[in-house]
Image 1 (cartoon, rainbow, N blue to C red):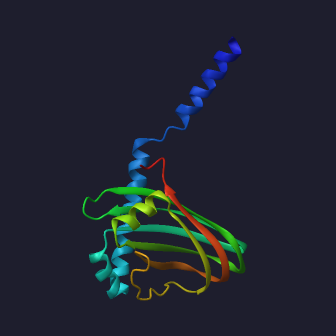
Image 2: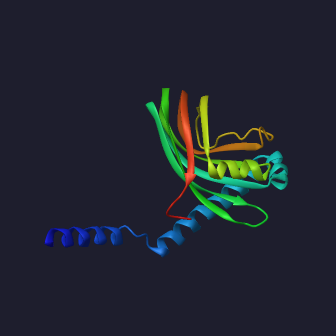
Image 3: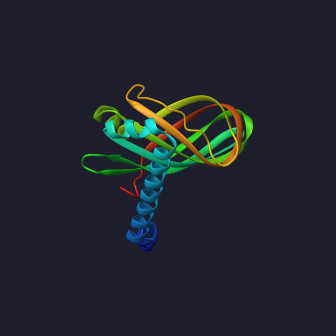
Length: 181
């Protein structure tokens, strides 16, 4: 009986220790929101077509990511998905993995513009994309080419810093943050 009570006490302590601090959650949300705002501002400065699509879109998402490539590709990040009319926010995580021919690392943001409620809902619920890419990113800023909605989504990747030369096949998964929502 003592062992059972001790086990319950230890499990209770572990549960309490892992309970997130409300202030830490608020701070992390504020950090993600500030990153999203700055990324949108930068995107609109670099791409006149992005502002037009943003004005037309139902919702948007902004993620800050770090990607490392040394034969295997791995990365992760955090972001927020915002429904424009209601301003409701869903905080999400991002993870990626794959194989490549390349070496390097870079930090970047990705802005998604969702044309409709359906593409927004699908992203929040399923959030999966698969990629097969060849890219060369070097220097301080990456180029943001003009784009349009394709299958209801426009995607703008923006490089912060880093050097990346690669050809890879990777998968990226986006999912709701249990801690921040």
